[in-house]
Every structure is written in C-alpha cells, then in structure tokens.
Image: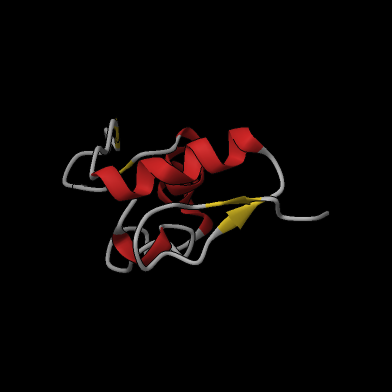
Length: 79
C-alpha cells in the first residue's frame, strides 16, 4: 500500500502505510528497550514485542548463533 506516514526523525527515510506502524517505528529512535531477553547470559533487548519473541525463538535451537549477531529486524541496532 501507499506509505503516507513518514518518520519525522532527522535523517530517517522510513515511512509507513499505517499510523500505528509509524508509532511503533518511532520507538527505535528513543533508545528505550523495554523488552529484555531472560535467557541466562544473554544481553539482548529491544523496543518491540515482536522482535523479542523472534529473538527468544533463537534460543530454542532454531539457530546456533542466537546472541552473537544483531537481529536483522533491529533497524541497525537502534531498536
């Protein structure tokens, strides 16, 4: 669909087709990472519930490199 909701953060070129999606995206700029992985020895945290759910799946044996690489959905590590 048409992306009619551009992010107003300087330098960010993200735009969303829905206002709610843009609101969720904006949390990537504030540095707040309210979702924290509870796996012992893992320091991963993120600002979105979906990303922590996907990340925790990595600990269940879906991937061997669970914590040594940034999650591709983490917007360059900002979220």
